Length: 319
Image (cartoon, rainbow, N blue to C red; front, top):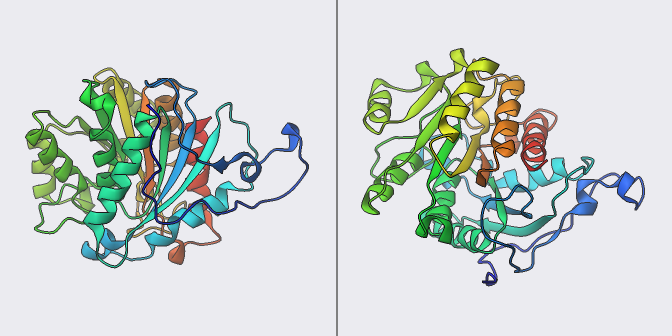
């Protein structure tokens, strides 16, 4: 089927960047990205699916979680960082615009983004969601869980690159609760959440959070244990358990020197080469169904450093 028009609040805006010429040999992202129009390609998880960028302009979840707000401006900042990059991708890339959260209307915004993501997945696209705080992850989950792939029995695992479990048990959802929300929603659907995390900071997760992770059967790798070999083995073991992967990247998994513009900068963090290698491994597996990147806060960035890292990771995942 062809997806209907997506429920976005802001249509795609013009991309800009350095101009070196019109030929393919000069091509940059800003010249390659085109507005998304509803279309369909064969459904599945082929490596060359067209990628569709969708912004999720939200920091309502960060505010509820008592973090540093500003992530609502992240989608524009990541596009700005992507625009001038040389375009070497073999796949087409489109921009669907943004879903934005007005005030504290987080749940409504997540629902709209979820519908947009489901529409993209059902049309055979690879959604690339630019958050937003990590409340973005529950919007992504709604989209993935509602897709035909899951309805037809595809086993989807959630791989989170993050310093935090985000399994808080709170009366009001926030950027700290999305994966517990996923676990509970999966239980209602008669499924079990397959959830793994790379980069957990022991000092930044309470005993209660570790206990919740253990009760849910969460696999995790501590930031201090994230050597290249350990991360590769961890990802390989996780990939072997699932048919497809939803990859979510919280930029606070990186050291604060690399990613200063986040809600909660990391004192330790996982080195960028390790995170990049994980992204390459997931992309090369052919199992990448959906991805998002979250927690960029342009207000606290330095020289656009964090936005540039986010853009580099998106480029890596789509390459």
